[in-house]
Length: 276
Image (tube, rainbow, N blue to C red; front, side, top):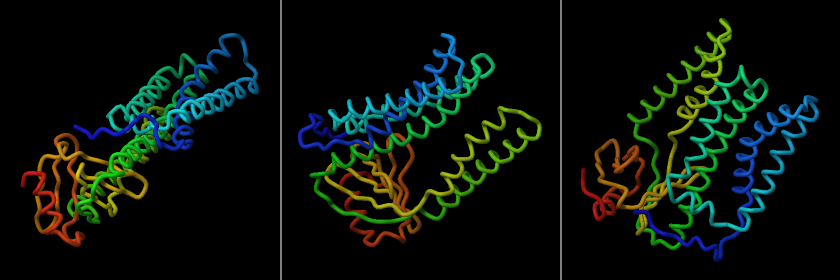
């Protein structure tokens, strides 16, 4: 069970960045239906459609920032649950529907597809930002037990590079074949897959783990994650790696050689987790 943090807004500062990203996400999803609506009522001028598109995104973003400014703990509340990934799933489904309706809806389908992809990226940002804000809130007054800084173990690094390289290669080949033979599905699939492979290739760097009385915090260069102790199952330590097994999700892996005080880190984990 995750620790409960205050969400009544007391002492919380306004968060315009989260509001702006959330507003842009909603604006991207709402703009294509507005364009379709304008076309349906007979508006065909390019400048009018463009104005409706830009105006929708701007207006929705402004309203969302205004609404969330009065709810500074909204991001914390979202970050405490797996619902933070709902915007990602929604945007992915939106893009798929847009792609499937290209022939029927014309410009509206094209906008839905590409705006869905952009919204997907903003959805990921919303998930990461809310998770980071929840982590900051839940660990703000928690007693720190120990911390260590380490990269991924060498074996995990090799697997990550292999998978990331394979995904990127498949994406490039698929896009090239689609371009040569004019197969739109392969071109779009390659465009979607390539960023995923690139992300795998560029991740895996050094992270800081902070063990607190409430759980384990993982600090990345642009994000923070929190795992309550009851979300973690066991740990295993050898000369190559320290592996912390989660009850759900991927394990947390650290290179043993990078940890300054391995014995103290192991003692902290042994007090709260079983030795796998």
